[in-house]
Length: 346
Image 1 (cartoon, rainbow, N blue to C red):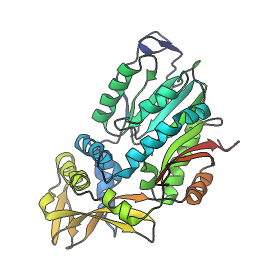
Image 2: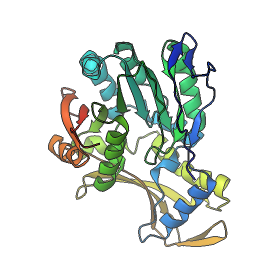
Image 3: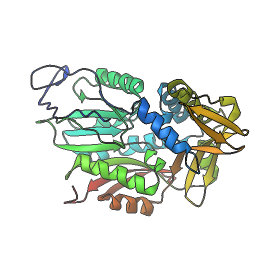
Image 4: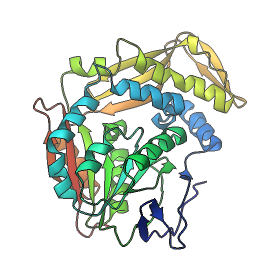
């Protein structure tokens, strides 16, 4: 059941941050994250498919989120450092496009490592709304940003951002909303779901709003494959942690040593795929349900699609968004794009 933070009106920003109409500083985090029942239902449904799967969002518990932070700093993992370079080179152009008094809603905010680059360049941002599925990671990052930016209202929301969630009004300071989606997470979705995700962003920001998004570009698989199967095994540990999480939270009896990590480039679908592969024929029990695995059968945990500029423009157009600006590095490994809502689409 999604619990929405409806009708929250925030009409004054003090030196302490956010202040509601009755003068009380709101505390805590809006929580619309998946509960155990939803987690269990998603896992059981996914393991019944011919290609067993578990949604990638469940990779991000506290440990998984910390491991992903480590991945972002690896030598092989080019997306993070390349996107940061692009942001540093072009952030003032981005800030000019976003304009004064905007509310930044960051999807999948994680540690919010790129956010300060943007906040430092913006003129009088009205608020920052980080949205992440991991409560612990979200609150730690939000508290740090609140300390570092005392003049900006910070309103964290713990949620699966592919589902409905509400963002409060920050009137009268709010002039427009911008969905900020850094990293290459849009590539985790198959095309139809990527369109749906972008459409939800367009609906949230509304006419006059925009989307600032990271888009990973097509490149040599020799660069891609090590980025998703590093020599230190951090990506392996990140993926395999899902088994430990399911055992802890769902009462399953996965034996992690009976599975292994598998990653490869799928040329046909233009994506890196990550799987957990069974080392032998075995059965696993989850909440009283039995799932059988053949030797070498896999659980598909995550994909990362790579795009040409024209491919992504077509996906954006299907979500009633127009590609207004594209910033890229000199090797065209990665791009940061600014999308605007097509007039009359919301």
